Length: 273
Length: 311
Image (cartoon, rainbow over all chains, first blue to last red):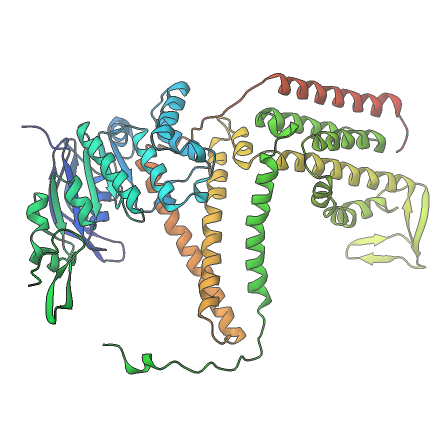
């Protein structure tokens, strides 16, 4: 049996002020799998991603990565910490926090520099990323001067420059225009084709449908409400309504009042006649 | 269901006499000026010019050498020569001299009052009197310091004061030449050594995030202005400012935590590393020789030609 990349067992997370962030979450992610964490705002998607990334640690339960339990001491120093950070890349929702260098060029170079690559290799990787993501024109600009879409592109370039096996993506399509959303979906497809493991948190049903092998739905009670293949999950309107991913929509059509669940996906199914 | 009063538009209220809150407006104007100042300096640093084209590290080290040389000069003409060298390099760099002098002049009165004027007085630098400022029969005590009966400006004191002012002026001129012709990122990177790496990282991150926080300040102010129908009392305005200061502090703390998490996630293990570009081509060689010649030249003028002359 192939060893999972991540295994979370009955994880609870409470914030320092006592608020519940995640409750009794169990999840296994296999190598090469693309898992989408789907949920409304504040359902615990980002919390679960941060736990998998070893940036937060469970209040109860445990999270394993590559067969090792993630604890503060395991990730403080040493070979495991180094290998873990190299193998797992995180795209943060707040790109302003993620992009902390003076220029886009330095930003992309930051990760490869931590890998002890030669200067030539670092520059080669940075140049390739700038070309791939069409960021050459802004290479010497400060991240604060970029648009939201450009910041997201730089953040992805930052991740890819380290070439991690696993990508943890927190709301990657938030604040992207439709063209960039499409671009991201195609990029995710390509990464899946390369055998990368993706764990993506989103509330965008389109993205979930297109990039997921498996969807894990988080409810507003911070518990995992369901998991399964994307189509089975996305067609379960009752489930989506209960976790606040679709809403009831009422309108009059041909003089008849229609009330139906509504999302901006193909699940918008009703008969007007 | 919306409450019915939403359907009624309130009649506009007569505008009350506006009470100004100079502190808030001034602070916000200054924050906007910081951004403008930086954008302007960046534009100057991007212009095609001689100093702009030089490698930042070469420029930093050469200007440091010129600054050190300035401290060894004891005569005004040699300091003027060094200043003229700096001004010529700046003129070659398409920086308007007016802008440059504006940046340099403002600090002279402060230097004059705080450093130069006391140095010119007889109780600090005794010597030959040029001007008598005042004379008292019994003398004056300023705390533990007893002033002499006659307070004068001495020739030796005036010479020392003029030297201090000119040296500071040349120093500021050289520093402004460096900062106006070098992009901030390049300048910070030029300071990168294994010893300075953590400081350089902190400095560059401070610069990166100060704009984010300035934008938050600006947005808060705009939002408040958009929602202000009638200005509140001065006390209410002060409470608002206090609340926003606290909010900004809390926001910057949260940001610190998120940035550190992002650094950890990207493999940061407490060691700051950076790609530092350094080149030494024909221009850098020419500039280094010019600086070397200028330093040797002004020191020769200072020590050999001017020798024991007081000025």
